[in-house]
Length: 383
Image (cartoon, rainbow, N blue to C red):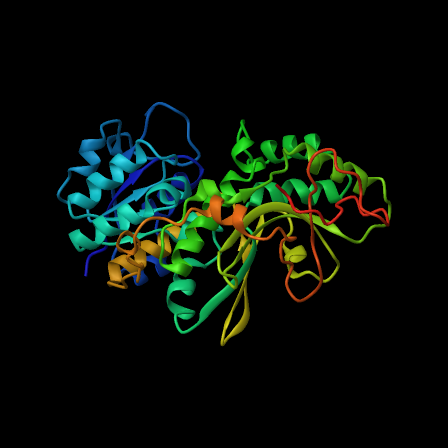
């Protein structure tokens, strides 16, 4: 059995890590693929740009059609990020009968239903383990290992950049200094607004919610408060003025399907000692799933970095090549997307759930005073 022939779209941090493994595959990767993989094309914008991995110039192309239209290519790995032109490239690959691996949460949050339906019609695979939580296995476990369960709630730390920033703040850094340190360490972009605003975590939460419910979810309707929110900055400053506090901040993504309307939110929460999400430090991600009959299941590990995400991407490649199909729900066949924003507005306001270990305190709106007793978070509902 031969290994797969691959076209790689993008040679950034994750793309470089994937290329390194494909060009010099370790013995276990060759064994699990049943042969040596062949990296035939790498689509880039600038072939002359210095990169952390050496790729033969003959493999590099700026022409998408050379990579997407090559009949020898078995699998296309899309790692360029963003919605467009990534969506055009993935559609072209699927229509041509190529299976696709992607770690592009922005694309999937916008177009998962459409792309999954197209893959189903063409009889090929769409796999995206690396799109949520980096190297933490969550997509296949959710669809396969928890298939006999009804998921009731989910709480998670889904953004490694924000978690890294908050970990440094716990150690005494200012928020601004922590963001700069994250940029210097390669965990934050030059423009970190996508992470700090909570948009990145909201997209990932929407993807998980779609897999849980089998229905489309509008990620822009997820109730969202980020680290850039003035109310959070006020609460963070008030917390810093209370030496010895044992509570710590995390940017928490939560979903609750117990009521008549789903509740999805991303917001900073001041978590009490003993909350399992506090075990996620640095760029680690953690996902807690409450389901029947299993109870609470915990997934944790590195949520950012090239090697961590490349691990998930290559696992998808192995699964596709072995014929291990991902049982994606028929999102396109379930009717119109739920309007999460309208549902959240119609729901009774209540603090975000913190699980059975104790209450968490979402950040108050800007200008709100600390709650009685001096708690700077005040336990108020984030808007």
